Amino acid sequence: MFAFGGDGALLHRWWNGTEWVQWEVVTEAPHGDAVSCVWTADRLDVFVASRGRGVWYRSFAM
Image 1 (cartoon, rainbow, N blue to C red):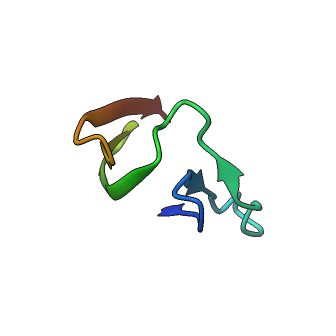
Image 2 (image 1 turned 180 degrees about the vertical axis):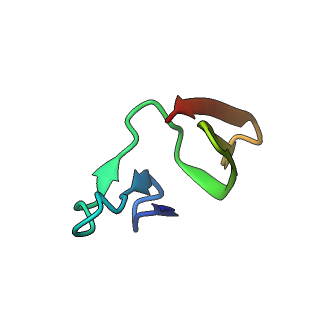
Image 3 (image 1 turned 60 degrees about the horizontal axis):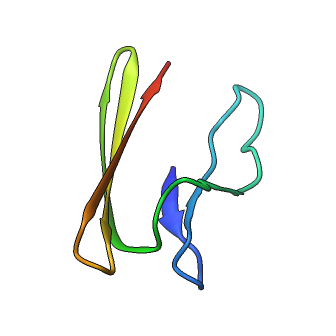
């Protein structure tokens, strides 16, 4: 799960099979206005529209 914190930082958390892990900051991501995720069987692609109008992208292997 991804969301923006009150300061605009991108946060994430996940289900570990037993409980939700606490929110963590995605430190490489810019502060943004929108986030979009695409998930396939073995990878998660995350896109952030930054406040400077750039687009940040990161792929997470599962």
